[in-house]
Image 1 (spheres, rainbow, N blue to C red):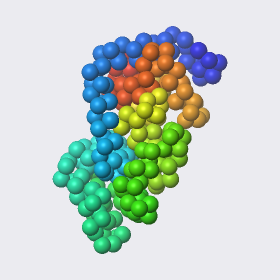
Image 2: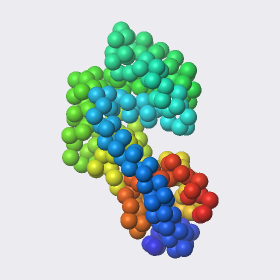
Image 3: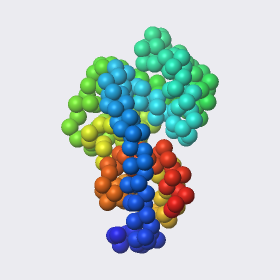
Length: 233
């Protein structure tokens, strides 16, 4: 355990408990994780990959519930798909469509998010369209290049830049952590409070390495099974 960990109040026993939990829960949910990996790899092949992930990001920003209403509901998703928005004549029309559908889907802060998503749409159009942007994104050679590219889109910061690529089980993002509210809840339980995103990520990557699992696996386990971590800790 590093001095930084000790200074933040984390005991070696707590760190070892996290490592053991990570290993045990990976074994317990191995089938589920493998299924997610396969689905993720297929996700990269979607012709609307980036737009789909932008909608996923915006629908979960402020609470995951919005994803059920917008992403899981195929009818609503189609109404705000890239192709459908492209059929509309004006920026105002696209903003109104997004605002209406996100409100119906119970996405938080839909009034703020709708114009931001239209900015994303316009940025993609300026870059020669969705197919060209998907190709540019997926052809980048390093994680840092990918994150820099994604963070140029409105509303996409370090967490979502990671999560977009982690959703697709991208090989450059299998040792990354998307610092969301559930990871923060585990951090709070462990009484760790780092200043920088990279410190949190490195801490959980150390735990994953000690457990012999991928950072991606630890991240997804915490997301799907938060209570399995919180209760023993």
